[in-house]
Amino acid sequence: MTADLAYVVAGASLLLAIVLPDLLDRWAISAPMVLVGIGMLIGLTPLPDGLPLDPQDNRAAIEHTTELVVIVALMGVGLALDRPLEVRSRRSWRQWSSTWRLLAIGMPLTIAAVAALGWVAGLAPAVALLLGAALAPTDPVLASDVQVAGPQTGDHEVDERDELRFALTSEAGLNDGLAFPFVYAAILLATEGAVSGWALEWVGFYLVAKVVIGVLAGVVVGKLLAYVAFRSSNRSLRVAERGESLLALAALIASYGVGEVLGGYGFLSVFVCAISFRSAERSHDYHAAMHEVAERLERMLTLFVLLVLGIALTRGLLEALDWRGVAIGLALILVVRPLAGVVALVPWPGGDGSAALSQRERWATAFFGVRGVGSIYYLAYAAGEDQSLAQDWLWSTVAFTVVASVLIHGVLATPVMAHIDSARRGKPRSAA
Image (tube, rainbow, N blue to C red):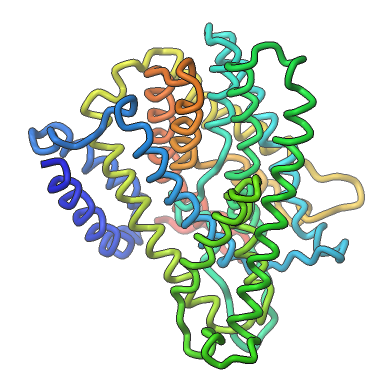
């Protein structure tokens, strides 16, 4: 019965993934909002009795499903970015400064603030740190109006002109991997105890070495696949010539596998692989074809997870939720992330990439830190490493925060971005 119901849910999510984007295009309602709502309604019926929804009993399945969703999303995000990142060009690095500042300043501030709120609320230090780390990654895919549209190709200069959408999309592509060191810090705190016993190991291996390995693995795999696809001497291997876009799937699986086998962060490997591949033949239409494959698969998987999440919400997932979880979740969405983002994006003397953001764009960038599937993955991963981190309260709080983020950001994304786009063009705000 469980397998049959899984097919029903998967089929429903696929159908909705196909029709919802166009149906909701003119409304301040996102497809994720609808999927969660439909899931909650399904959860009130007897239909899903056989579905494996309990996170404690199905932790491994949840971990691997959300892991797949994240790596597919990272490949799509990396291929969507038009702005190049040239390692030897200082100007190129400065053009990504909004991203670096959101990662180096905004994300640690967010983790620290959420962990502090958890500690004040009575959580053990390791649990509080895990909550902050798990809720650190952003996921603009769940609010399509705040991400870049996709790779621009053809006979023109290829670059990303929308600084707001670029900052949110590139941040999401990198922070899924860069949150991992802090998740490991929570695991080490739970398993090893005092920080003094593992601090040097954490800095040297988990914070530095695994990041470097993940990035290098992504660069190598991305450049190798790009060479084969575009410039191989063997015509059969030049898959770009015949538009074989399934290379996107091979790339994300290969880069993730290589990064993990070498001991790095596979999430970083996938994203870096995508932008490395994108750097080759930037105007080639093949990039758009690969992005379309990754985007469609990502949409299907994400909406499937959200539909199941909605079912779980009305089947007991929120039973352990209390005022502390509600307060922390809403504080993250409405206060912590916006303030951390604004602090990170304050213009510096001399100007940099963040200076390209107007004041309203900085506030929008700071506010739209959508929480999503990555948070569920990190919680499932940590729960498998130590039993003290596998708490029903954590599952309830993370689920509540993700759903609240989907609702709040989903409602506000369309009108806010429409207002900003209109102001950018110098036109009055639309009455709609």
